[in-house]
Image (cartoon, rainbow, N blue to C red):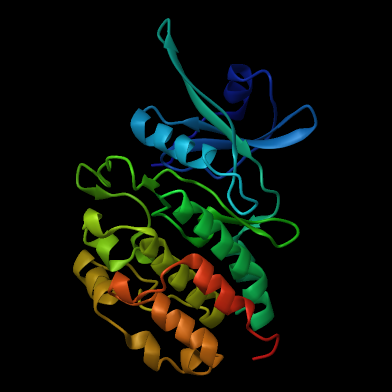
Length: 284
């Protein structure tokens, strides 16, 4: 169930901000486009069901970074006084659209379009890795594309800081995140194996969707966990898809490496992937 807050109630709780419009909520947060002193921000009111430690981890993850392809946190507050709890964060507002809508509007991307979107995206992922952060919920809806078609990674609610004790990824048996973008080690819950290469698998799924127009292994129709496990952890049917086979040879090789079931066989870093993609030509 989505956590929703009436925009008028939110405005009364945060009088320092002009509330422009409500944004798409999630189960964890109600989100609003707000403005202060002529500058636009995204204000997120945290659902009371959310783990304080998890939210603080998200904030810490974002505050350690200063990178054009990673959203920055501007303000964060948690207080509980007089029976009233205030728990919210304010982050950079990225005008434009998310990558899922961007891809839906444009169809399969050309090599030049792939380079323009995914090279800076790799730069942002590399910045996360250099700060020992694994996003763990990388997907098109968590990538904003601004009006200059520059991608910005958002929503670090499931981020794992590798130098901190891990929080569980399940609540009462429910899996958090979007499993169709999970690497095998994440789907099966082997936390000791989660590292930046886990995000590289998700990057591979997104890149495949951008180039081919569909997920490499997961069907659009509902799937049981066993079917999902088979699709993500075992199946390599995408390698025989005619649309995949028709791709640029270098792009095919990048996709094959990113989508390796064993993390040790994936590229060593997002920077390496970005360098290869940057060499792609403008024509297929």
